[in-house]
Length: 256
Image (cartoon, rainbow, N blue to C red; front, top):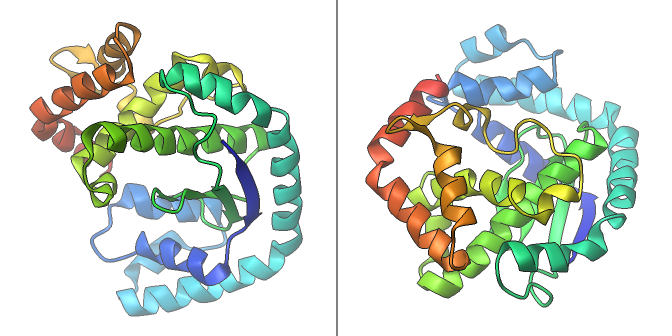
């Protein structure tokens, strides 16, 4: 398992920033940009028609890209240096966490450092984004979060032999992966690679209950009593399938 760090292309960065500013996007997602860039006026921006909104955000992000050029370059150097401290431990901790040898997989992963405070991933290319203004420790945590997604879907596909197009938002398999990352990281030696923050997954999952039990408590039981990672996959998938309507409803309420 190997990860390299590089700068995100501006146009590619901007495309995903604008994706979360489309008409109909919930405020929870839209506001992430404005929390990161207080210079942008949220109320003014959302009052604009979509085309004008995109033009305004584009010009503002061009300004930010110029202002933060050196900061981004320095962040890449800091993140890369910090990552080297744990890089040689990846194979062993992930092999244990996934009950499979991980020594020869995911050697092409790339962390793209840029302007977007939301950090998307591409399962097919094994790439993900990192916000340049993250604290170094949080950047490491985010990287481990994304690598856990990659490993999850690598072994998931080997087990289920399904279509990787089903691994993206808003598919139920994507939803499951966002839940199980917390479970796998917290309950394996991955957790010891770096000091973990309060939230590894989306914050609203932490107090979400199904049938009176916190979903992370349910997942922890499945994981700690697993025969192997495939047993955990099947039990956790069955759980979200059975409870998908309630999960979707609670997520929608949380993201208002």
